Image (cartoon, rainbow, N blue to C red; front, side, top):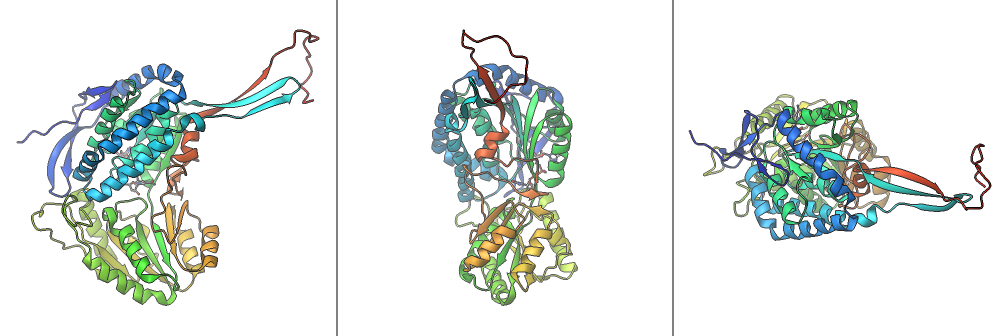
Length: 500
Ligand code: NAD
């Protein structure tokens, strides 16, 4: 039996072996080979990480905001320097192409850049003479020890939606990345240390429900930011809030692209192919449903089918590869099972990715680009989040029917409209009940200084990630009302304060 390197935790500024006896396997999805072992941390392991974060809190929260920002500036430069090795790690454990992995590191870096502005972002308001001789001002303070729990599909970017802002605001942090992709977080921890972050401010534990539940009930954890699937997001939100914590839990998605008859068709086809099959469809903002309005349907399906057949599938580090494998054998089998179901329930299977073979990678977890036409809302492939390279075309006869379809869907993360009509676009952005909207933009991920988040079953909690809402989530507001008595004042007045 081969023994594999065990990924340590990161506690108090250094790698620490977990004490848990439970371990899982990390695989390279392109080869199917086990490459590392990951600890499934116990409550005791989590306790050690939270204790380190708690011990580091008083010093860090008292550090001037500009000093905290400078750590982020150095961290940002280190990310730039190590972009290539980060993308290699991301691609090795996740399977996405190197170019896609690098793009995701860059998007994460943009949040770090946003976090360097924290001295400005934490400025409060001041009112002179809120009452006679009374001044008032507002300040925002860190909430304390915060935890982040992240999914497998963005090993660098999604953690970086959270900890740069949390840390810049003066909190300390415990990250529990996905057990499928544990190594990138460890590299980020090393770079944070190199950037001058004091030990204990950032910590990493690994594992499954045991580690997560230990964080959810831990009395010293004050806020939890989660990104993952909807059933787990609901569990995180309900358990965390029941234990008195502030929680934001971003969940799953079923994102529609509506194509109007007046759309620029070749552009829409290219955009939808990228948004549907990029990262093998394993993006929470991936397009999974294409809504063809009116007579655009036939040429649209023909265009998508022709382009889908040309997508090159292979290992993420391969030359000219456009699409890598999915994350695990179980994910591959689940996706193939859903394709079986779609065909069985009467959808037209136009491009079938079930039997793909990638020479030299026979044990990799590949599913080829798949396209269904004439999908209806009752079908399983429409109702369930597939999280794989499967596009489903639904045909409708008007923009209103398209809006009704999107608005009835329980998920509401992202949506896109392809049109040349300003009127249709304006009506769409006003009436669609979805958190992130693209007009001729297939994946409308907000830039770092806006906030990322969906509506309905795609988000539990009130605040979205990063941008101003991220700062809000990781800080508590306080209003101070002050009176500095003039030595000549005439004594205490026991009446209700008057605002004049
Ligand atoms: P997941 O929900 O299985 O796992 C997410 C995290 O929760 C992981 O760290 C995992 O270890 C932990 N976890 C898993 N099961 C748990 C349980 N029963 N109790 C407690 N913790 C548990 O998600 P995933 O498969 O890693 O990622 C894919 C999902 O994430 C998709 O549904 C996708 O849409 C969603 N996602 C959403 C967004 C968003 O911004 N809304 C972004 C990325 C991914």
